[in-house]
Image 1: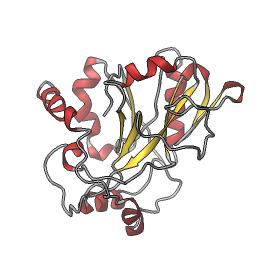
Image 2: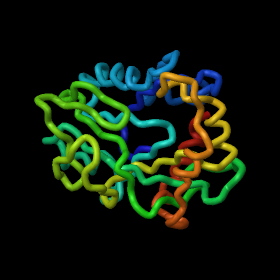
Image 3: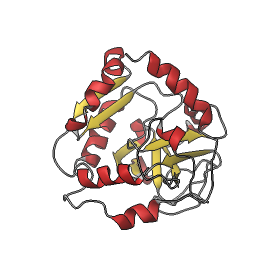
Length: 236
């Protein structure tokens, strides 16, 4: 879920999910460029293939997963926020982990509509928005920049690749790790073929550790719900 984005580069490692068919209207319109990438341990490879391609195509690039939603808090859109960061190599964003809200089964509706409970505070983990012309290589949660530059946080403070201050009041990444218990079981049974070198599945302990529900019914995503439903009407 990204407000103010021109194009998506999507690598799919789960062809049986039919993602390409779902994305066909966006692929046809040029909003999405879709690639299938097979095998295990291909996440970083996919990120860096995109980085290489994006250097001449986009001013900003962010490698994110399908369960991560970049959310501007201090501005209406991501692009508006980034106008003030054009002198920097990259911006490190923190996760805010969303829990199941006690839901056991999958129900109809958008992810942002069904899950509104989250952790009390942000996580040291997260993702980065990078300037691809100044980036050497992209990782799962970080990137490495030319001349050894460090990224900045949303307050424009230089920050280490790992750790540093947590800032979620201007821009954050909503991380819907498990969703309902039923959806987590589907994720568990699917395995971790794209990001992992092994087929070792997720386990119950990981669901419990990510099932954060201290803050109840956060309305921050509500404004996007009618807009998404309106856009979905035009997808067919």
